[in-house]
Length: 156
Image 1 (cartoon, one colour):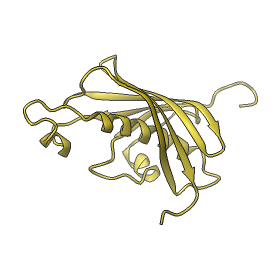
Image 2: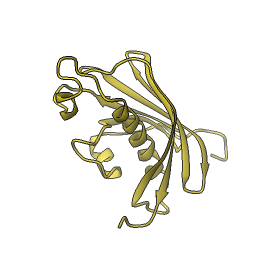
Image 3: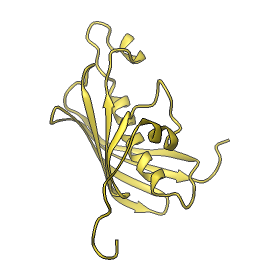
């Protein structure tokens, strides 16, 4: 803002997340966004439950959330703030462009409450880049740099 004062933090319940993101069960991986600081950063929440279909095969005796789904939760959290703050173009789709420096430090398992922290690193036009971390019980379980493209075009 011009006066140097940050706007009040926003949050989005599941109904508002559903209004922003096109994803639905079983691929919606953000239950709530508890904090949005403009288009600069956000904290999303994923409540991991044993009822999720990927746990039937990953792994039946010791369920672990697949790393690609942790990355997707990061992308969905970042995508929500892109769409929320790019209303002037009314994007119809957000394309995942890159994943860089992904690291997985600890398994995410049923019963975990995963916080997804995303922070905008760069924006050029409709291309956005974010530094992302997934945190469980105060400890970092994964991190990555991701980028996305907002498009006003209708998908074919």
